[in-house]
Amino acid sequence: MMRLQDMKILIFSLFISAVVGHGIYDDETHHKMTRKISKRMKMMSKSLENVVSMLDTLQSQKDQCEASVANMTKELQKLSDKIIDDNIGGVTSGPPHIDLTDEEDRSDGKPVRVDVTSAFDDCMKSLDLDVMPKENAYIWCLRLSLWQFNHNYSDEYEDDSDLEILQVSDNTRSKRSARFIRRRLAPRDMTQPPSGFRIRREYRTLTRAERRRFHDALNVLYEDGTIDCFSRVHRNAIRSSGAHGGVAFLPWHRAFLALFEEALRQVDTRVFIPYWDSSIDDNMEAGPALSVMWDNEHLGPGNGVVNSGPFAGWVTPQSPLRREIARGTGSLIRQSRIDTAMLLCRLGDFTRRWENAHNGVHRWVGGTMARSFAASDPVFYMHHAFVDYQWEKFREHQINDCDIDPAFDYPPTSDENHDAEQPMDGMRFLINRDGIADYWTTNWYNYEDTPTCDTNCGDTPDMFCDPIKDLCTGEIRFDLNNGGRKKRQARQTPPPSDLLNQSNTSSVDCRNKKNLYAQSCYSLPRPRTEEEYADSILRGEIVPPREIEMIEARIQMEIIEFEKTPPDSEPIFFQAPPDDRSDCRTMETCVRDLVFAVIRGFKVTGKGYSGF
Image (cartoon, rainbow, N blue to C red; front, top):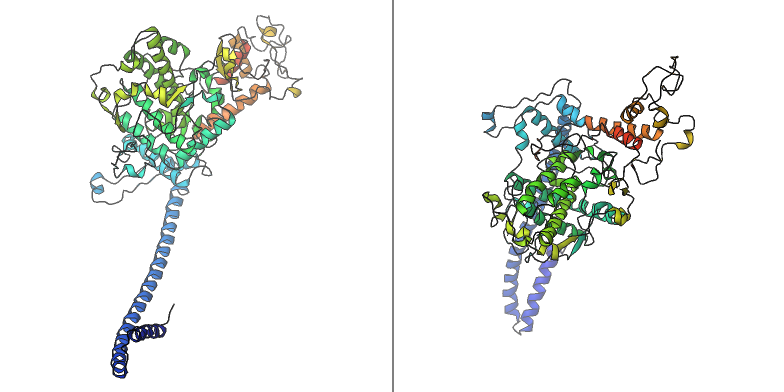
C-alpha cells in the first residue's frame, strides 16, 4: 500500500509538471502555489487518515462479530446435543405420551413443549442412522409421536397449494414454488418434447447399464429437489380431487409422467421411464412377495424403511421412504382385469375400472406408495407408466375394434375438477382435454410391448415363461440352487409320492427319527394331500430342503425388520372399491406358497431348479 508521504510527493510532482507544461511557472507563482498546495495537502492528509481509521474500526468490528457468531454456534450446538440426548437416551419405558401446550398459548408465538417417551425412543432405535441423516430421523420420529397422540397432526404440512410445474415461456414464479422448481420443464410448444422421442420398455428388460443410468438419474433428481417438487404437485392434485376419482385421472397422469421423464432426460438423454408390468409378478405361483423386483439390484427392499439398494436413505416430506409389500392389502394388476377392461369401448367406462385396478397396486406396495406423498417413491412412476401403457393399448383397441377416435373421446362429467376445459392441477398451461391428444404418443414417447412367451420373455434373467399358464412370470429373488446340495446326501426330503396315500405301520419311538413319517414310525398322521405335505415340511415334521430353510430364514428376518419399523404417520389414501379382493399371498405365506407350488410341479424359477 502507498504511504501517505509518497502520495503527497506524487500529487505535488504531477501538479508541477502540469504547470510547467503550460509555461506559467515563475517565482511569484511558485510561492503562491506552494502555499496552496501545502494547505490542500494537509486537508487531504487528514481525510486519508480518517478513512484509514474507519477501515481499521470496521475490521475490528468484523473480527468481533465473527467471534461472537462462532461462540453462539458452539452454544447452540451444545444445547441441540443436550436436547437430542435427553430425547433419545433419557426416555423411560411406557406408553407413548405427549404433553402439548394449550391451544390459546400457541397464538402468542410461544414454543410448544413436547415431552416424548417411548414412542420417540422406539422409533429412533428402529432406524439405521448410518444410512438416514439424523436430522431427518429426528423430525420423522417426532412427527410419528405426535400423530399417535393426535391423528390430525399428520395433515398439517406447509401449504404448497401454489406449487406447480412451469413452462419455459411462463414468467410467473410464486414465492413458495421458487424453493422447489429447479428447471422449467414444460416446453413452449407442448406438442414437441425438448429431449426428443423415446420408447419405454418393461423395467426388467433393461440391461444392467441401462438400469444403472435410470437409477443414477433418479438420484440426481432426488438430490436437487425435483422429485420432492413432483411429489408435492401430485399430492396437491389428489387432495384437490383434480387427478383422481374422475375422468381426468388418465389424461392428468399422462402429462405429469411425460414432464417427469423430461426432467430425467435433462440429466441423461438416454434415460426413459421404464414401466413395471405388475401382472408378471401376479403370475408367480410362488407369490409376488418373492419377486426379484425387491432386491438391491432392482428397486431395493420391499419391507420397512428403504435402507439399501439404489434408493437407500431417501426421505419424503412426510417420512423416510418405506414399503410394505404383500401385507394382505391390495393386489397387483391381474391379467384377467386387463382382458376385461379391453372389452370396453368408451374412455369413461375404461377409466373407472382401470383406476380401481391401479389403486390396488398402491395398496399392495404400501408404505409411501399408499399415501399422499406416493410420488416420492420411484415405483410410482414405473407403475403409472404401465397404467399409461395399457391405456395406450385401449386407445388402439378403440380405433381398430370400436371405430372411435380416442383424441375426441373425453367423457362428459358433472365434476368441474375433471371438466374437459379445466386447467390441470399443477400444470395450468394444459387443460384436461389436452391429455387425450395424439401428440403424446406420436411425438413424445411410445411403448415396446410387454414381454410374452413368444418373445422368450424379453431374453432377461429376471423373468421366465410359465409353460402351464403360457405367461411370463417374475423370477424370485432367492437362488434355489444355492442351498448346499453337496451336503444334502444324508437329509433328502422324501417326494410326495413316497408319503401320500400310504398306510402307517406299528407304533415305535420316533424321537430320534429325522423323518417322522418313516415306515417304522407311527407318531403323527401321515399327510394325505399336497397342502398337508407342504405344511408338514414347514412345521419341520419332514426334513425341509436346505434352500427352503434358507429362504424361510431370510423372509423371517425381513418380517422382523418390518415389524420393528414404526407405522406411517398418515392413513392410506388409495382406497379399494367395495368389491375388490386383496391378494391373500402375503409375506407370512410366501414360503408355504413356494413349497406348495414346487410340490404341484409348477415352474417357480427359470434357473434350472428341479424341485425336491
